[in-house]
Image (cartoon, rainbow, N blue to C red; front, top):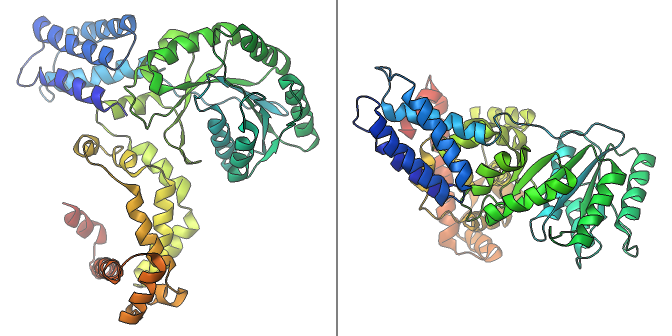
Length: 440
């Protein structure tokens, strides 16, 4: 995500490297590179020009302090302008009402139904009683897909498979939600083209009759400027409240994320970065600007960690670490929690300076599967006491996990090395300092 844009912007800042001061000539050259980077990222030309004109005007109007370089100053100005371009402030979803109705619309294949499931999961974790309503009466298996997603999210799904009237289903779903005390109703609608007048009339009718507290347009970020143009066409009919960007983990150039707010004047409220239920984030313009410029996003990374690791579990694990009782069961548990946080490469990219270093590295998350299979093939007693695992046990474990005794042996050696490191840290007076030294 945004890799090419980050590289091109870095090139623009490099043009100022070695310059002691800002001049019209070097800023003009840097602004030209920034505009080229934005256009290459599929940002609307008019928007790209407006942004670079603002950057140029602000850069020329400032004096460079002795403590920073012109390149650093331009980076800060660019970050501020990108933040403003993407909306400035993060805006939350409006779920006021009894029940609050969230109407979800968008093109075919944009990821609407998957988003509905993720949003239900997101809101349920915040303590909301959520219900999904299946109003896609055209796409084969759409209702079944929503039911599967509802099951994964642990929420009820209201559907009438034999009814071919989307409005009737939606109204019946809301009535069912009121009766059963569901506080939020998420209405999944059929994908439609902006040029399909009949389908656009249907979504307009739903919007008018349901009076939703929130109407969200789901845009596929892989389609770049097409997503922006479609958003404008939908907004003209629905006057929606916010945008959801999906597939940001794919080969996207970022143009939709950077242009859509300026073109439709509606906030980006969520972004989806994977297939897992947890892969949905509230959109923060300032954090995204930091990611684009290679500054990372430690705040979002910490929030992801907080969602996966509860305080009681952390205390229990800390006590075991202090007593050198950390075992393979604990290791497996932590591994599963890390996987729930999302794509490993994306998470590492949130650390300042790391994104650029790992951009060409292929991180295959399937590498975790043999480790999990090996540990699952052990008995509970073996997981608690890995020292008892002899050659015959290794052979049995390897056979049960579809691996080799050498693979089992390698995992045990690595785990033993980890336990020795934990033991050493516990003996040291300052474990944080020693860990920092090891990392360096």
